[in-house]
Image 1: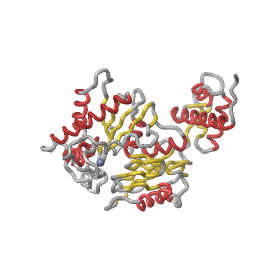
Image 2: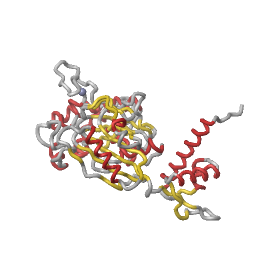
Image 3: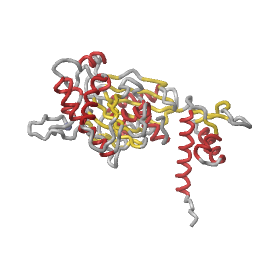
Amino acid sequence: MKAHLTPSNQSTVRRQNRRHVLQCVIDADGTASRASIARETGLTSATVSSIVTELIDSKLVKNSGRASSTGGKPATSLRLRTDRLCIGALIVRRHTVRAAAVNLRGEVVWERPIHRSPSVVGISDIRAAVVGLLENQPLALLSIGVDTPGALNGGVILESVQMQLNATDLAAALADVTSVPIHLINDADADGLREFSLVGSEDRSLLSISIGLGIGAAIVIDGVLHRGPHSVAGEIGHVRVDFTPEAPLCNCGNRGCLEQFASLPVVLGLDADADYLLDSPGFDADRLSERISEPGLAEKLDRSHRILAATIITICSTLDIATVAIGGDAPLLGESYVAGLRHYCELWQPVGSVPLQLRLTAGPLVMPFRGASEHALRQALDVTWG
Ligand SMILES: [Zn+2]
């Protein structure tokens, strides 16, 4: 029987084709032509030409010189435009808000000086950052990604122990400031997406564990960030790992949470607002890396490694993931931090499982806005830099 496309199916197909064509332009980095895209996607030349015209009209793509040709008339190459549209990116932490605009190639074109708050950052701080972004970034905003700790769903912060927020509709709170779509992404997911975008993995799957003031995981399977039907996949920081009555009390109100054994303040014997930590005014990466080798921390560090290794092995065995990146602030502690974790992951490798490849991410100081902006790009255009 011949299949008939309904108008809604046709528009879905058109949207998917548009995404494929735009992704080809991004991946080829200035060398794609209409003909090469047709070969790559299997679409007809007429369909590719029509979609390219649409992308040019939308200020996303431009004609750019001549592409190399296999003979005959030289083809016109296509390139992303970087002079018209941009993506806003906010990084919201317990005591800081950072804001930047990135162009469609992911390059920062504007950045606001870091805003520090002596008390826990609130909606007014985030609002001021968005206003600053709207007033100062040089291009037209396509969407805004907000990287923040907590369980999130769409534009709503469901629960954030670190930010002391719950059931807060951030997108609604910013609606009178801007109509640009706001896309929230959990800090651990942003970290994982950034790592996947910058480094990737051989089989396009990755478990990223962010360790800092809190602990969270990002799960990327076949290049797609897995959030789950309730948008809380990877919220492992408040999973109980000590079931004894004397298990330490967590600031979430429960006892024995993973964060009480493996977050950096606990491992390093610091309070939650210590100036060793990245979002504190006195932060100094060298002091933090020196701290890890101080005598007296060995026992806590070893305990955290054992508990984290068991957690990592369980997640990887469940989801068949072989590559693990340790991110958050932990990469600032250096290779010696991850060595202990790698030791237990190798020692306890389950029978019949794939050996885990454990690495540190590039750390929070390298392209910090990539996670939020990659998320906003994916939400706005359904394409990716990674
Ligand atoms: Zn807890």
